[in-house]
Image (cartoon, rainbow, N blue to C red; front, side):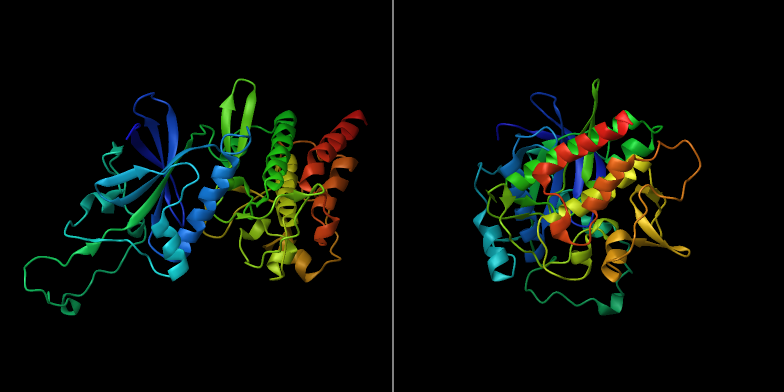
Length: 387
């Protein structure tokens, strides 16, 4: 292998994989390395979607996370880089057949795989890397339930070697958008820069026929530079690719899977209807409103605040999309009337408020398309600043 990547520490763990901070052994460049265990066809399909989307964006936009390389792991001592434009045939077969194929039987207990899936191409310097299955406590197995080995030889039966994809991406030192903004005092200029950059990122994705489907502050990473924060849209596991733009508009491909995060999902997604790329615009509207007014919420069981707008129902918070699905005539109050204790940024002006309501329209066709959004945001901010 031409390049070796050294894992340094775990920086994130989600439903589908683990992200490590690492560096390239030859150059010392810091990278983020995401391990995606290919344990079932459903997960593999999501991983391939993410890989295809990231390859399509490549290193072509400053506000979309860059993919450096992708590697396929087939065992504890087997790791190879994938050539650009190529996908492993066994993973495609797994999706089509509905069962994981190509997982050869081996005699090794695969202690290294249970820890982190490291291999000669990935050096492990961490002390806490564990397989995703260990993140949830399990009840100890009863001795009475153990079955004797039915084989003629002694020792444990061989286990299938699990496949895994490793995505090597650029590293963002500012954390996600929640962490970055909420750890700093409000700054209007910074907030406006973030909003404009997100407009450019989504316009770029839609121009390639990519609908993200899970836009939220957790999936926006931040690189800290002397000129200010550079935001990067990331996590394309739920994204979908369709044909390119036609006459300045995405082909009207409709999606049916209800996916995304509750507080950022569009009404049509909440309602189980078919939807298009305009669902991304609604998610952006929720984010923009929260960023510009510093609106936060705390999900049940969580300890850290998140940026996001919502509707109050007594003591409970209801996602905007859910509230608008139940009542399309609901009048949203932008700027919000419920003000928290200072310090808070000044509320959006009339032009920006009108644009936010436009983005949050219950009717998807009433929302502005992505390619017009940056110009509309800039014009609204400029008009409000002139008043």
